[in-house]
Length: 241
Image 1: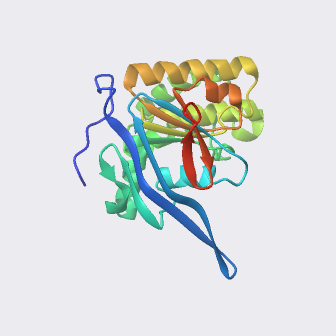
Image 2: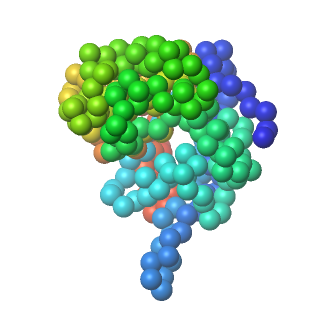
């Protein structure tokens, strides 16, 4: 594995955290091929927050899966923190995701048998931290997203908004260099969504964490550093037309 600079408060803002180079993803639809992403390129700096908008079926979730190493492009390269994902085997890719990438899915994907605290601490425990240390950090994040009083409840005992906040805490607990979010505020009320936005802004400034956010929420998108529209397999800067 290539040696990569670890994300942190001292990271230079000019450093590129994420780069896509000529990424194409095609699916077979019966006798025909459907190209969802077509030579797409994207560069995101450390500490930058980028919103991606687009119509349903435009390929936004496909793009997030590629960026997170959950899928592989048919052509092109994805590089995170200086590391080409294509050069990593399955085990190394899992370790890399745990070290550098946080995920917030549209549907929270919390483990039903674990409490909110255990779900949040799990990425740190997988990394090898002691349970007590991991859970102390997890409680801090649950406090920051406003759901600490529900820490000992399982997902089935939480509201949709509470489950989403736990998922956000889980994504942030490892201090990742890149956070990928799919409709992160879809189940949140306006006040809670504002709290999450404030936390994202704080993390971007303090630790140079980069955010890529797929959303239909124009208000959420407008509060990010850049808004890109996914259209016909390409990304278009909304500010530049």
